Length: 425
Image (cartoon, rainbow, N blue to C red; front, side):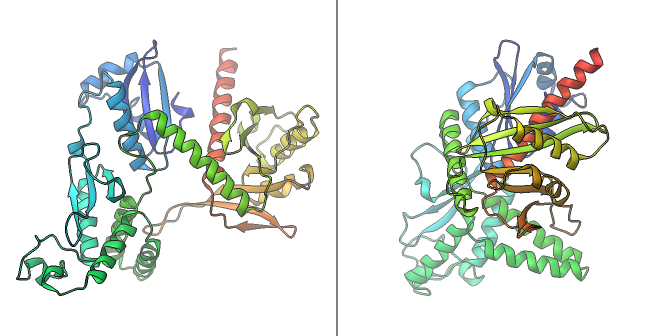
């Protein structure tokens, strides 16, 4: 069960043999988190240790980030009230940042309790499980864009004015327009729209790292991570149901599909096929094909190709065989407008001559790990540009990354089942 789970943020459900939900949790990395339940003795969590023998199935729902996972986890726990979620999540354990407009000069506050309809959703950011991070970002934003927490009517400047954290609007030290500009900038940060500032911090961090001033680089790295954490986009309301979440997610995927169609100049983009290879040193080799149509993954169109002509590790040649058979198969007469390959230059160079010319080919490969402070591997995309394979920049990558991950999951699932049969036999 665990091997098929991806390294994605999301929520997981443990179910018993009757299909009842025993436990619901969230994770930044689903695979790592779920795997942890099957390692160690869980002595510090006796109720979980008691539950594990009852677990017969695991279900997951992927999210775009940890914040979305938190929102969904909370909604599902409130709905199903699983037996082994002993400490049902209380809203007080989370933190929100709220821009209050009740005052003459709007203020910014951290709130811990939340009731539906209590706050204007447009001005509410969160929830965030890391209260310490929220407080750090709150203080940092106040240094960048001072705001007032005083009551109207005060004639003297407050202590926060003296240390530069309050612009003193009630004392006439800043205009209404100037004050509202600060609030607007804070809103941009909380909405994840201040990428330029973060990029500047990343440049400064790199300079410190290059000059071996690692302590200064580490401080900036932590600040960047905090700002990115707070600025994660969340398209879902804290009080929405699981069904509403899934419906909105499908809509967002469709929107992403349309944007990708425009970006790639494929106005008639309806279908994408993605291919992956799974083998053990060339043995038990299979190719997987997964499909997305109009932004929605269509598992009815999935296919598995047994590699027949190659018995040594060679993913490019195996892909060549799979794609040649796929496009020569007259029964598979539903053609894609885009073929996505899990691989880079080596894979693309081998398959061009077996794919019809009117079909766009893209490769996706994992970037190498960046060892410098703050660095992380990123996906790279490859395409034929004037008959040369070059790295290309793609903005709307969500559906492509999801499809590659699904192809990998499908290949692993099939391959695991196949190995089990071989071992049994």
